Image (tube, rainbow, N blue to C red; front, side):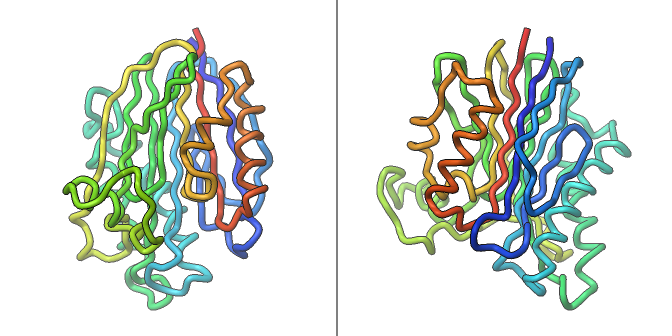
Length: 265
C-alpha cells in the first residue's frame, strides 16, 4: 500500500496574516504562500491536520490566532509522541486533543496579547485501510471514492449546525453569516477545557481520497461546487489546483488550506 499526498496553503487576497497551519507527516507548515506540493509515502501510515486560528477570538488578532493554530499542532504531535498509551485502536484519540488544548492554555493564557486565542482542528490519522477522523470547529474532512461519491466525515461546531441537530433549522436553507459562529474551539483558557470533539473511524478502499480543508475553501465556494469540480480522473495535485483556482476566482477572502491523501494499492 502507498499513500499519495498533495497540499497547499495561501493567506488569500484579503488577510495580511496566515492564521491557518497544516501538519503533513510530522512537518508543520504556516507560511503566507505554500505552492502545491505532491509526495508519495512508502508506508501505510500518516498523520495529517489542518488548524485555523480564530480571528475573532481573544488576544491581539495580529499575532494570537496564528500562534494558537501552530501551537495546537505542535502540542498534538508532542502528545501523540509522549503518550502512545492513549491511542485508541492504534489511532489518535480525544485525550491527545485535550492535552493539546491544555498546553495551548499553558503557553498563551498568561499573556494579555494571547489570552483566549483559539483555533479549530481537523485531523486524519491514516493507518492501512482505516483512518481516525477528529475535529473541533469548522475545519472539515471529506471522503470521496473513485466513483465520485462524497461524504463529510467531520462535524461543524457552529451555531447553525447546532440548530440543525436540534431540528430548529434546515440544512438546505440559506442563513445569515452570524449562524456560522463557532460554538466549539480549542481555546487558550484553562477554564475552556470542556469542548466537544467529533471522532469517527472509517474504512478506506483503494483509490479513496480524504480531503482536509479550512473554511477558506468550503465557505468560499461551497460544498456543491467542491463536488462539481471534482474529477476522479485527475491526479490529486491537479485536483488541488482546480479547487484552489476556484477559490481564487471567488475572491479568496480568507486564509485557505487544502490537503488531499489518496490510498493506493
